Image 1 (tube, rainbow, N blue to C red):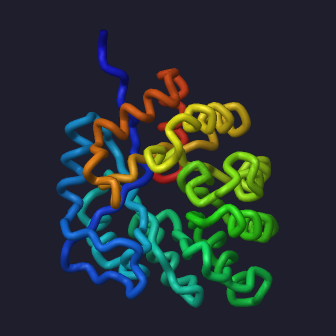
Image 2 (image 1 turned 45 degrees about the vertical axis):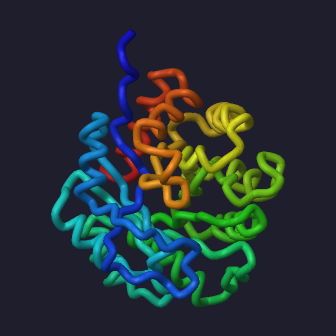
Length: 266
């Protein structure tokens, strides 16, 4: 039996070195490095052509290493973390450099910014003007407030990790339902990433519902390499095997890859 065709693009990884500064409240502090060369070696070993570096909350808005990587490798794109006061000129420069989105992640116990206030509205409007998406890794209650507030902004939205990683009520929770409802606007995508962090007996059902309600044209796949906190039990081959298991149809997997290529590269 031949091996499954690998995805063309991995839309979610993290790369870092030991020299990078952790934020004061970093939830984990890896004692190893996962530099871009190791990530690219993982891609090449498994036949994946393109990758997307996702900003890791551990390093806050220290985007220097990511930007240096984009300058060296045309096969990569990235998201970064930015201050709400970032200028439109800086956002335009980031897009030219290969940045395609800004990740927004805060702890479930932290209050969201004033979503209707001028500072936040200005930020998301500038993102939309710069063709940068807002990537959300939030709890269910936070998603249920954030996503509707973005409806009139015109900004593109990418929801991380099935929209379920921090959602206590699963697919019946307000956060997941808000993500599904947002798909109708044509500017929202959901990542089927980090599935190994979710209940394994429920994971195929999560994927099946997303495929039924979103379709592959609104889904992205990501490995979540190097699996911070789960390094002892995960590797790139296992991440791929999990993708093949929850999306068994090769044509659907190719369509998900096409979605990633369009969003991040074309």
